[in-house]
Every structure is written in C-alpha cells, then in structure tokens.
Image (tube, rainbow, N blue to C red; front, side, top):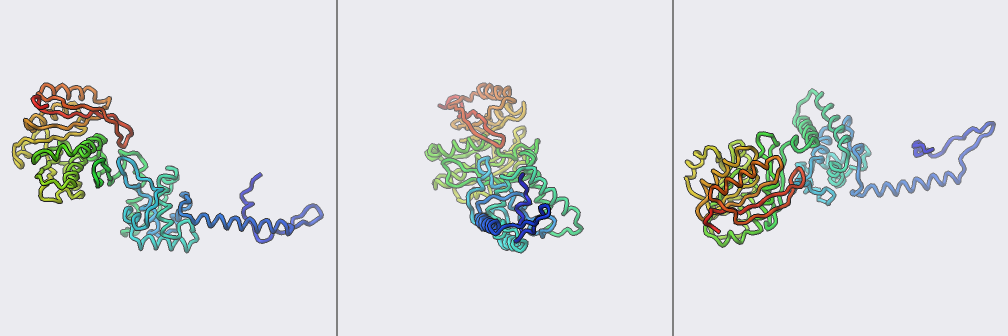
Length: 414
C-alpha cells in the first residue's frame, strides 16, 4: 500500500526489531535513497521553469503573508483583459512590466512580494518573473471552489482587523471583486475591454460599469461588434461621399460610433465629418468617458459628440444641435421592450435625410420575436425600404448569437 510518509526519509533509518533479531538498512538501499534525492533535485530544477503551473495551496498563506503580498496576489488574479468578449490567453508570455501595467501593480511592490516569498522558502514565487507568469494563469486554471475559499479567507482575516489603512481597504475591495467575478456576468463589477475590429488598425478600448437590469446600455452587446466590423471593412464607401453628419441612436458604450470615428481618423480623410453618439442620461456619462479614452477628437476635421437623446422627447437634443437631418444613422440592438419598435422608427423617420441611409443590426432573440416583426412592419409603413439584408453570426458574453443586418433608406433611394 502506498504511504505518503515514505517520501519523508532521514539520512539513516534506525534498526528494526524482527523477533529477537535486529535488522538495519543495507548500504545498497542507502545508495538508492541518495539516488532518489538526486532525482528529486532534478525535479526541483524543472519547477524553476515559469511554465510549470501552481496550485492555490502554493500561494502565500493568508495567515502569515504581509498585507502587501496578499494584495499583490489579488491584483495578479484579476481577470485577463477581455478582447472581443473573450479573456486573453494568460499562457502567452508577457514581460513583467506589461503584466504589472495591466494589473495595476508597482514593480517595487512585486519585487517586495517575491523577496518575502523567497525568505519563507516559497520557491514557486520567489522571483518577479515567477509571480507574473504563474499567478495570473491560476485565475483560469484553478477550480472556482479553491479560489473562492482563498478569497473568503482573505475577507475573513481583513474584516476582523482593527486598522483601516489604504492597503487593508484595497485588499477587502479586491477580494470582494474577485468573488463577484466568479458569480456570472450579471454579478461582475466594472471592467475594461478591448475590441479588435476587422479593417481597423487600432483596438477600441471601452469601460463598462457594473451591469444592472435597468441600465442595459452600460454593457457592450454583440450586435455592436458585428455592425462595427461591417462599417470598418466597408469604409471606402464612406470616403467617396461628401462631408457627413452621422447619428448613432442608443450608442450604449459607444463601440459602433467610436469604431467608425477611429476608422475616419486612420483614413486621413480631408473631409469634415461629425458624429453624434446618443443615449439616455444615465448612459451618456460612461459614453463620454469612452469617447475620451479613444481620443476620437484627435483631428480638427472630425468632431465627435456624446450626448443625451431621449427617443420619447428629443427636445433637449434639438435645442442644443438643431433640427437637422443626418446622412447616416447607426442602430445596434435597439429592442428591449414592446415600446421600442415605435420609438426607434419615430427617431429614424425624424432624423434620416432624403438621401440618407440607416445601418441596423438586430439580434435574433426568441423573446422579442413579436417586437422584431413589429419593427419591420413599422419601417415599411414609414416609407423606409430595405436596400440590403444579411444574416450574421457572432458572440457576446453569453455565447453565440445570430443577427439580422439591414441597410435601409427612404423608399425612393436605391
């Protein structure tokens, strides 16, 4: 029978009593033990490879690790940067500097943590390189139960502490966030994402506040990614046109409009384009932040505004920007209630110019079949015709989704 204590061997075993005789380990067996230790030493050298995975049990123990070390671990366990609705692969080697930048850790803090691990014999994490290579991978490789137990231990210890210094407060915050990140998308805290769009050289950086059921516009939905890709890949058609006034209705986090703005900037066009990214007041604050993050107003011939446009009462928008018509309207995933089809058609009819065009991307959700059919009927009855129609496939945080893309124009335009 296998006995794990067999691995614990001293330099020499005491004699064993067999009846009235005494027996001791032979020299041959002693040589064998020494040979095993040499093998173990070789195995120890292999552990030095930063590709070797670790377990949650290899992390600095919460009961003895200094607060700065615990904070370093929690920051490194942050989810990887989300790219196109998927977490980036943490098995791809990154430099210590790039990991620290992404996770918000000072190099000196990381070095201090590695030094402490070295002094306590935690060889798996005794250098900054090992810390940066192994701990982030643990976030996706370890079992959720083990990670949740670790985070709970952190909370249990630091909630009982009398001191409320900055490090302790950050530990409590980060541990709570790590727990919520394991509880599904709707429970996740605010996050930053990157979207890589076909036809666009630079990635689009977006901040998403925590998702709430009454503020669905604070999340980026898959229809926006699909429509943004279509616009950027077919951008030459925009370049052939005059100066454009472009309006996005229900911009949400801004992926569609910001992608188009960045494509215009990359094109070095001499034309003067103006984009209006609009949504409700509670959405626009974050929308403005995303416009700023992506430097959409980097050139004088492109102006990008993020502002409020209430589909039921556009008065404040028109008082600020006038009652003009727009050459291009952008709409992605606009239906979340029975009222939305009528409201969106009202806005399209109000703002599309006689020579204008609407680019519309709608997910095929079973729950909103009736609303979607009503939208098509209302568009047709408003003398808006479908110029082009396609079925697209894409993904979002909940998996694969099918979409309907429609290019729509006033009935006399082909």
